Length: 240
Ligand code: 1GP
Image (cartoon, rainbow, N blue to C red):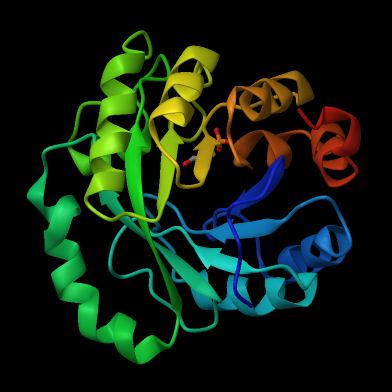
């Protein structure tokens, strides 16, 4: 299942394989089927259980594209449809710019996964997140839209096919409209935005600033009412 990320008002649900079990993921897949969710991202910056494969197998019945969002080259599994091949371009850690990719290249080629080369830009979301700790990088300050947008532009010029602005899982503050808007005006490629999004207003705000796809993780799993809202969200009146 190949995914066109260049959609309007797209929604991605991020599933962390460290949370849940096959029964729960199967129930989740049933809920996602036919819902407003366009794509399911699976992965995490640090996984301490070996649940990735079981999670993907259980989520398959959702009939949505399953795309790996890997924290490391250990998170490659052909049971997915594709992988965001992330290069952490806001950081200066060579392992996450090219090192892990070299390690994974042959495995990825053999996997048959659809590869989506993705510029990954961390923006400060008001508190340290697992991803900033694990990646050993500094996020870009949220009040420096020019720096974020220039970083994304450099990624596009280097040939990346998608751009992901992330405040990190559980961020206190979602990425500002200014950052999203300026980045959108600098680049042509599809823009994914996530981190700390906790209500419909924040989703709409990211869409109207130019995000193609908004990623919802933590809060949907902490708050059943929000999960229901996302699954049933009516995107039509929100079109720009
Ligand atoms: C994190 O963008 C994702 O990488 C989602 O973040 O869990 O805060 O929704 P949340």
